[in-house]
Length: 252
Ligand SMILES: [Mg+2]
Image (cartoon, rainbow, N blue to C red; front, side, top):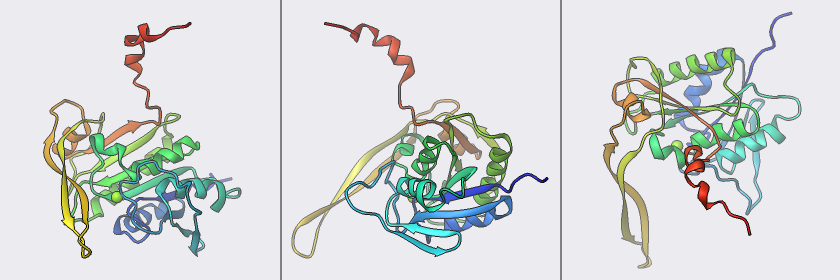
């Protein structure tokens, strides 16, 4: 008896119609049965938010494609507990390919990373893929890398509770590097404008000044032309500080 066909769930935060999710789906089709559950519209910056204040609608496009009018976290939660359940249990959840980097602190804002994290929390291995490009994007190389990494993760498995945040540089890459999350050097820039009714509105942007120079980070790997693979988990505890704050412990 042959091994059962792998089942792959795809989501993203750029929305169902983005070029990145289409490139990812195409790249993964040969690895197993692919199911896409993605946001109806762009949800970049949604982070790990779950929609609790309004109802959610699921729209089925065809046998393997659905949209949700919510966040990537909503998509993964509904995929695993409503849309695919109980018949289909994915072996892996791939999120992306995001148009734009999710490096350093920016990973905390990322809906792409959150999609993979939600899967991990629900017991399905999670991979997040981002292309470090903004305007002149070509997903060819990042899709090839996504397939290579997904294939390996399906074959070898991932350590429990671990997701991989994968960032792919533009163009041909020098190889893969396992990295740690770095720190960007940037400051928020708020633009104020006036709407047609005379009221001010605001747009959050930032001015970037590179990244903090430190060996082994995601930023460094991308700077050197490597694919950055940062193992992450949902546990936000700063473990090394527990002992340091030991004398805060008290009892009445
Ligand atoms: Mg995005």
